[in-house]
Length: 430
Ligand code: NAD
Image 1: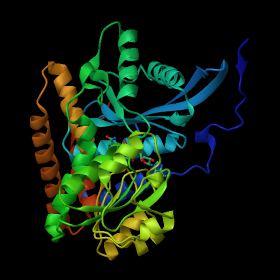
Image 2 (image 1 turned 45 degrees about the vertical axis):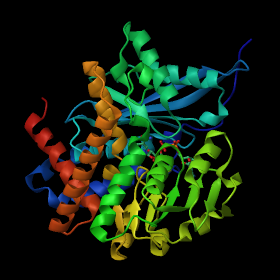
Image 3 (image 1 turned 180 degrees about the vertical axis):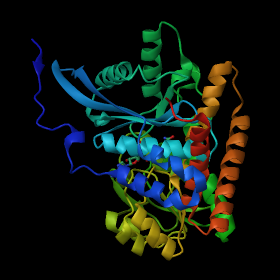
């Protein structure tokens, strides 16, 4: 007979002690208000997500017990096109976090001028604690539950922390089975064999590197022998590390969920990737010194790349960071009060909404390729990615100089102007 595990945890959205990244997003929006002129009339639109959808996800564990997980999909704003944003599987996922992440997607898509609104999803689960079969059942049930919101013209999910090509394959299959037709354009970040795009897996890390390089050029920070510190060594952090190393920089410290390591002469990035791929811990790889989390943030660098989770750099950490350029691989790693400290100290922050937009840019390419069933070469994809990312960075940098604001505020001004102009043109229904 089936048994049911009794959860003692309350639903996370009822728990006020959870972190509140949505408050950081609201504060970033407030900072743009003085720069929007008449369009400021519509600004409150961005403080109110369009739809916040909670789904309960029951799955049968391999031992026959029943377990429920919390899932979310949020449409933050659809003024400029269908929703676009990843799906996160992580034990700290909450409604508040998914709302913030969806808001950043709205801004990012508009900052890059991609024809999408902002969305995001997530399940509060540690994927490593589930068997492959359990993970598949969880993914399929989640997809089916959010099925009324997603679709190639409505909202197109993609991978984020804790999800990957396999997750996207299950999502695409589940949606397709429920529709009675193969719908490859419902998700991006798929394997090539299912209509994925060449270069998608590497796109975010590659974009992080492109924006870092361009910021370095403006500031006279040479790439050759530059010291790079990276937090998070998953999809984004590891590819960014490869690009920095290939350009002659030295990755002098890395941190992932297993701990922190350093080597002032440069960590062997390929060996670190092989170590993680083999399922070993970064802290067990040869040729590095294991250091504390405290020491990790003290290591001097030219480029610091937070590429793990949000809320990592607070005001007190910002006071002691010894770096020249922070390139936000992760979404929301720097709190607004830390932004102020970094600006005062003359440390440049290349904001997430530009720095990590390479992933959604190639997701856009994938979506376009799926619609036309015509696929581009990797060289074509990388060239287009490079030119879009570099142009987006420079238009943000130019506006920042013109308005005397941070790169983040400049990116928000460009994005909010596009979103609210669309809102204004569309008018208010009814
Ligand atoms: P991932 O799951 O592939 O990797 C996450 C990495 O962070 C892992 O190395 C993990 O060990 C590490 N990590 C987790 N918790 C940590 C902690 N408490 N301290 C230090 N390290 C920790 O995820 P990813 O796809 O590389 O995403 C990383 C960040 O980049 C997220 O903020 C995500 O939203 C953002 N991002 C990802 C993409 C993409 O295309 N994958 C696109 C844009 C933004």
